[in-house]
Length: 195
Image 1 (cartoon, rainbow, N blue to C red):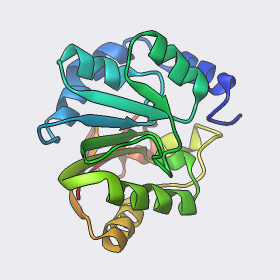
Image 2: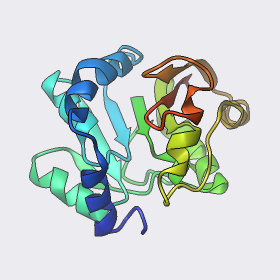
Image 3: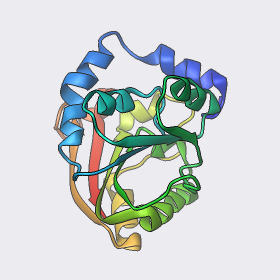
Image 4: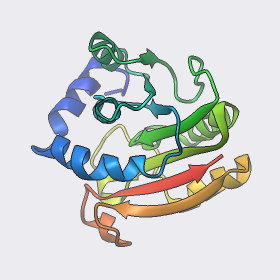
């Protein structure tokens, strides 16, 4: 299965637990939005569009890109500002972007592609712009056959050093305890980076 296939769209829609939408809308997404500056938000790899729906409900200015044409078509039909694009190139993205998010996206790329993502973002992000990177921890990484690279703090710091951007903070969510991701697959690592 590839992330740009219709089967991946179906995989995403089927894998979510009951109550997930409410948890995201009430707890996780508000926590993320507090990390942003004022201005537009670009969702890089929006998947089924949960975060875009949240931004719409809060009257935020936003857009999204995804490499899966079936996901893009589905959200476009619902009236969302979304485009088919490669996160490593960002050909359709017109800067400067004030805020961007990659939620469970980078782990689907190989190392060279991740470098390309940061290189492209360096050109598109506004000065002082905020990027939120969310990636699975050990247990979550092992649960998806399309995962290619385990993204940890060391790798994020390498990207920050290479592209002269700053890791402002990192935390685990929902349980902010180091090491818990070895046992709980739903626990994520969140990085907040400024350009």
